[in-house]
Amino acid sequence: MKTLFRSYFHYVFVLFSCTSSLAQPKNLIPNPGFELNTGCPGASVYLRNTNNWHKIKNHKGTPDYYYGNCDYHGIINPMAPGNLPYEGQGYVGQFVYYSHLNQCEYIVVKLNEKMVKDSSYYLEYYVLPSTLYPHRIDSYGTHFSTTEPKGQNDQEFKVVPLQEHIGNPKGSFITDTINWTKISGTYVAQGGEQYATFGNFRKFEERKTILEDGNIAQPLAAYMFIDGIGLKLSSDTAQFDFDPLVQPDIAILAQQQFKDSIEVHEDATDSIVTHEYDFREIIVKDTFYVKQNPVKIRLWDHLKYDHDTVTVLLDDHVLLKKIPIKKRKKSFKIAIPPGAHILKIVAVNLGEIPPNTVSVRLKDGKHERTYVLNSDLGVTEALNLKVE
Image 1 (spheres, rainbow, N blue to C red):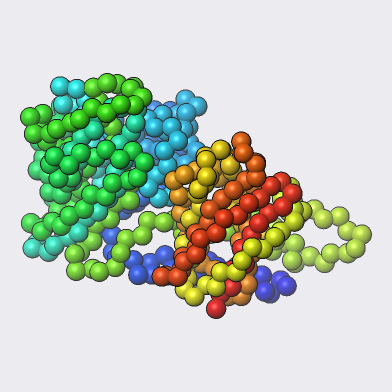
Image 2: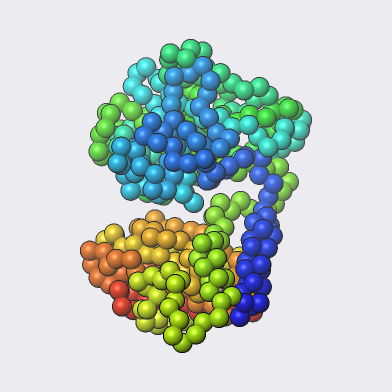
């Protein structure tokens, strides 16, 4: 058993390191999903603790960083409570319009390598307007530069008049506050560009806004979230995939490895930490045959959102702990070791409408299936995963 577990442990982590770049394009954007950080940004946000990204220099704008359950004065994402990132746990928000003063905020990143003269590059990213600010704008774009751009005055929020190389089409308002809107395009490099700046670069008379109903925090503003940024050579045909690659909880693995290495007697006291869900009845609803690793897993509440919370396990190894299940799909990927395994979606609570109901979609390559699992505090419905 000990030998088998060590083989499992080795396989999982070797496969994670191998599959993370499988069929992935070379992304020139570091930290493209804002997943890498040095800790919760704290109540003042301002991109604090965010790897690679920062606000534009010599400018008063203070874009915001959101990550998982990090709170700001007790509120998770105060600009749009309840919103989820495009993928993963991190994303950024910024003002893209603020009254007739035409005030804006910008985020900047240094590319992984300089652009090559006359080469064509493809850029894509996803944006979502905040419902707390009623204006919807048609202006959001990207500027590439050889040197790091700067604002004109560190005491002002005004628009930085940079050329918009790739952006949202003029007159096409970004209005969807539920589904992330994709912005994409190609850029032919002048040579040596190594910085990308994101925001609204259009002058007051060039940009357009429309007013929509909703919760009004500031009636003269528009605020935009951004996530899932990919920049590659246009000749690279591989597709971007921003789903995080999840690995089993190391602490749980270590506990199991210790448990497997000791000799257990009938009268011995088990000192291994157990959980309340360890003793629940497991009902396997179906079998999903894995033909290709990694497997993409999506979870969501297809019924009325009622604050269901779950823990996700592969066999007895924790993948995600105490995550809320909402209408917006939460996605991740995992490499499944050879053999048969049980994917358990364990109810942490029953929400407001029992039982705890979760939609689960599994996809490996082009093969996918969707299931609905119902669980309570005594029974867990699960799926059998068999790697062929």
